[in-house]
Amino acid sequence: MVEDLRVNDRLVIPAAELQWRFSRASGPGGQGVNTTDSRVELRFDVEQSAVLGPFRRSRLLQRLASRLEGGCLRVVVADERSQWQNRRLATLRLGELLREGLKPPPPPRRPTRPGRRAVQRRLDAKARRSAVKRRRQGKPSPED
Image (cartoon, rainbow, N blue to C red; front, top):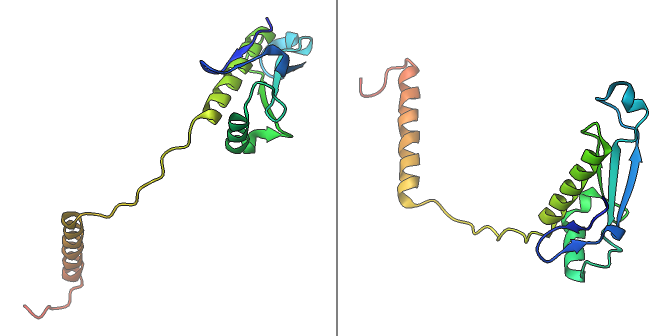
């Protein structure tokens, strides 16, 4: 069952760098949940990984900083009744987290200004609204 984790076309994390822990889970399973270690915790040490180059390592450390514990990325799964299904889900989630962390940052926003026509429409709408409120006040206007 232990196999390498394919993150993308260029990055494959060897199974030796993945640390697994199993424990008893809460939730569905009836009495069986008290006897089987179906909860799965998968850890990947980003700081000490041999397959990550300096660029990928720094990007992951920066983008996933809020999820790291001591330089390790941790995924915990206890969704299913069987350990095998939870292991599969844990590898999928870890792969997705690493793919998201390796994505390049979005391009910077270029500030824009509203066009003349948009500004004029906004001012016309304000004037119409102001006129409606003036009519509601009940005071006689100079035109009356």
